[in-house]
Image 1 (cartoon, helix red, strand yellow):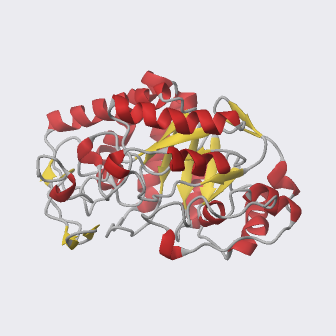
Image 2: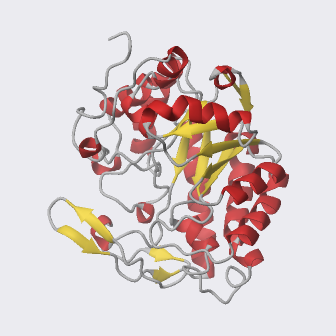
Image 3: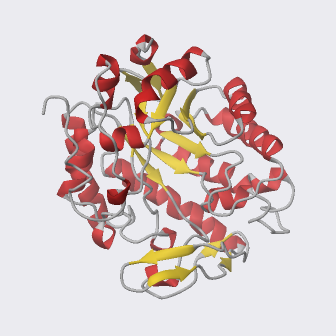
Length: 357
């Protein structure tokens, strides 16, 4: 049933040995926005994934939206991530870094200057930031980006992508999903601009397209992917024209020849099918998660239906550092512990046993 999972697949410049991808997962264990030796161990343990996509990593200090998330905008951060990529490559793995600017999902608590988060429009999220010392803090109304700010953000992302390559990553994924900055430009409820970046669909996709062009020029399109989540309401998003929006975005991005598009699927299978029809390179599908024990059969069925070239999972890899081996052998799976998802130490992070243990 799962034989098709273990066929090779080309994604960008890499021929991958199977089709089970490790999806990005925020783990909030990067003190002072620096990853450490335990993070290197965590990713090294999972180097058997066809492709690892890291946790969301802020391209600039203002891009941070949660406590203890890593950055890739300083020399110290580059050196810290190099230990991660070296460890993964030593085990034969392929690893992309996800760049995530959270936009309005930010808070002055996180910034050295105590300033406001920045976003396409001054529309508060209605969400809250968790802190260890002050409890939950309401997100403020963000500062609306000026045109010069948009150009600066594209430069920040592009520098961060170059930093990722310097740190040894095989490529970069732009996080355009889940209600973060790129998604905030795409959706009409968070983008109320009246200039060239707001209003009709062709304007709302402009930031994403210009960003992709800049990063692709900097590091190579075959080292770049983008993640989208059509119809996703997470972080109080509300797309009223999802089908038109993602058809336009797919059409605009297709000529760049990116390594892949990564679709986080919520309720819009019709849009997944449209993207699959229109996208010229690899499609990675991150489906709504089933019980862990169903992951292998579910992934196989999606591949058999032709909906994707590879399937990504989060909880499966979180709890099973050797998930590919377990799925192939039909072996029992470790169950994940939600209490240890965010923050803490090695417990619930690097202590999930592999089959050999």
